[in-house]
Image (cartoon, rainbow, N blue to C red; front, top):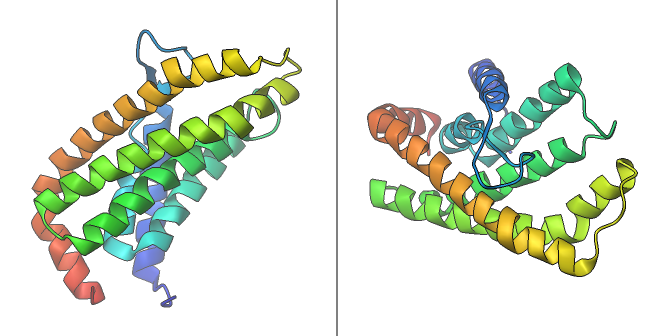
Length: 193
């Protein structure tokens, strides 16, 4: 891993702060359950990953969730939702970064965002079924859901929600990406990409 200079650390800090603020501006999508919220906090993390590499994107995701946990806490006392958000962010930005790194064009970014959305939706469905939803029931002292109930929730709510969320975030990112494309190219050239 390359040494990160002060400019990169500053950019990661700023993008983490913006990401945290975007995380606060969340909203539900009817008819999904109210605990599933859309926010645009992956956009700064994706910018960090594209400009400074995947470690920068991971750091933005991490710092955003740590800030949110420190400032707002968690209903369970344990940062299950923050860990889930961190993992969801990684499953979106890392595949997007790696695909875009292979095909550096607007079409490549479109394909990368589609892949990132699909990976996030599928992996988060699996993780919700086996780890996240059971963790919530344990830490909130709620009655455990049966396997058919959990499967129904994952298939009818979590999977389509994450696909829609990924699509919405991808559209917003593409609007920004098309405006910032020349700046992003200069940044990547300057870092030696």
